[in-house]
Length: 352
Image 1: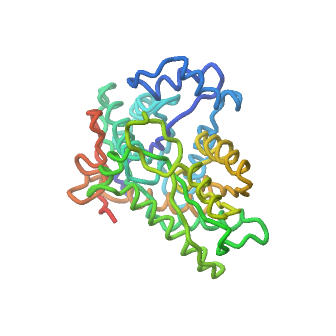
Image 2: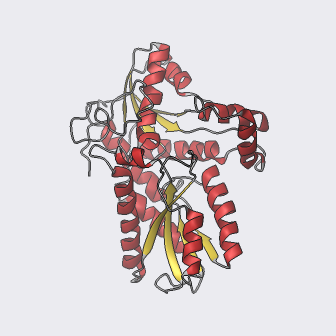
Image 3: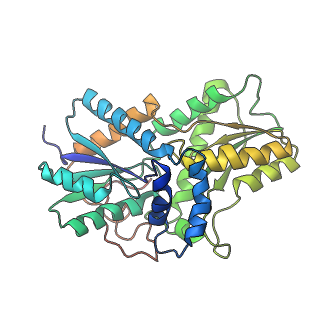
C-alpha cells in the first residue's frame, strides 16, 4: 500500500541531559526575551536538583519506541524519529538525516495534545524554519491536535482511578477534583484554533470526558475545576488563571481537605509537572493541611499509545493534503503576533 508520507518525526520540546547543558538549553528556550543569564542560572536550579537531567527526553524516547512498535504491529513499516526544538537531536539535523536517506514527505507529530501557539503552531514553525535553513527538498505536514482521541481521556481516567487512596470519595464535599494545564497569555488563548478559544474549549472537553469516565466506571459524579500552572510571563500581561497554588489555597478556605490533581495538559511527567505540582503545589497543600493526590500523565499508557498510533496510521494512509478554512492548522491558526516564522501546514482535519 502506498502511504501519503515516507517518514514520521515525533516533535519534542527538548531538555538538558547534564549540568553543563542546563543554561545553554534555557538560553535557547528564552532566546529574544532579554532574560539575564543570572536569572537563567536561578531557574536552572530546578534542573540541577535532578542532576541537570530533564526527564522529558527519556520519556519521549520511550514514547517513540512505543509508537514504532504499535505502528509495526499495524503492518506499517515507516521510519519514525525524534526531533527536539531546544536540545539534540535538533529538528534541522533530523530532517537532514532523513533527506539523506531518501525521504521527501514528512509527517510531524507534536508531543502536545491541544491547539495553541506553543502546543501546535510553534512545532509547525520548527519544521518550517528547519526546511528554510537547510534548503532541503522536503514536504512536511503536522498532525492536528489529538485531544479528541477517545483513548486520551480514557487513559487519564484509568490512571486517575488507580491513583486514588483507598476510601477517598470524589463526591464528598471535602474532596475536589482539579485538572491542571499550562497557563498561556489570554491573547494566545483567544487566538487558538481555527475559530479561537480552542485551548480552553479542548481542555474542558477532555476534563468532561474524564469525569464521565469516572461516572461510567463506578457511578461517582463529582464537581471539578480547571486551573493553570507554569506561568512565565511578566506580571502586567494577563495569563490564564487561577494558578494551581491559588486554587488550592481557595479550596482549603472552603473546607476542602483532599485535592486530586490531574495534569491533563501534559502527556509526560516532565520538569513542569515535577517542579510545579510535585514540589510547589505539594508544599502549598502541606502548609494548608490539605492532602494532595497527583495522578500520572498518560506517558506510554498502552491505550493512549494505541490511539495515537491509530491516528498517525490513519493520516499516513491519506493523501498528504493541506487543510482549508475551518480546519486545524489552517493559515494563521494559533498565530503569535510576535512571531512571523515560516510554518508548514497541518493535515486536513475539521475542527471539533
